[in-house]
Length: 272
Image (cartoon, rainbow, N blue to C red; front, top):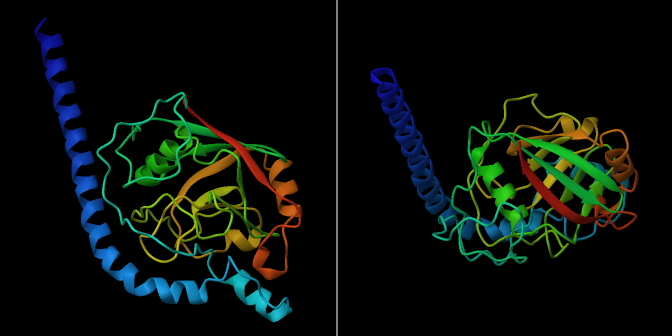
């Protein structure tokens, strides 16, 4: 009995410590978001002017190559809320809630950071199975999982595909300017961590993550600088679905739009 009691006390202490770590992380989210909220107000005009993924290039090779070599970007427009942690409850884990695409703030922590999660991204070109990495990117994985459980990504169009570079999705408006209404901080990888099949967040600068993400589809994408939160890796569908998606990429106009419509039919998350 004495040993069992000690073990229970030990487990309770560990649980309290874990809760405190999560609380401190979310406090940090609020502080960093407030700081970047001020920066974003001044930066939005400049971002819209230089990040032209929603517009069209002239089509000349020099312009296209210049944009391909630039980081993946997400145009920010009409952002009214910078990361404030929502007081709402987490959505049902089975995705049974109604579809939702507008939020007042970053969602509460709805995942177990020590857990294991995978997602099946069903597209009209086939399925991609992705292993998520909550240990390396808890905020980013929590965001993706929560949005998926709200069916945020269902029936959305991947608005940008550049061959041998990236497949960019996660914008319900398919314009390159859409998002959930909040931004949250980066969780950046080390140099050299990107590879074909990596799942990462598109952004418009430091700590401006929302809902848009990209899947690296070629060597040029794998060579990106580590400026984008890396939160998963495709484990199934690399040799068929991802290849098919890459093949409809548009080398003109910075990949917008792809040569054929690519639509996400659903994103289903499983806690393993």
